Image (cartoon, rainbow, N blue to C red):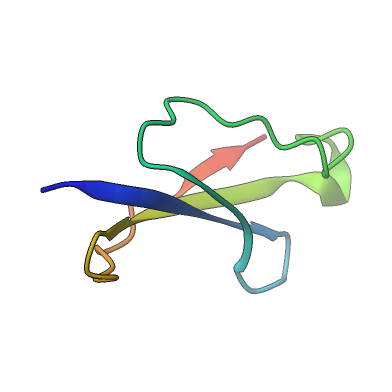
Length: 68
């Protein structure tokens, strides 16, 4: 399957997931510069990703990864 993009979502403690970025389907890494001091106190963050194909069909979400 050809993925055109990846949708990256983040939630901080006690909040819901929000989409923070859309990156190319060839992207292999992403650095979130919008969250300062991730891993300390209220800035602990959870991330999940889903793929978007050429027909705009979205995959299921990845496993949630937590930055602590």
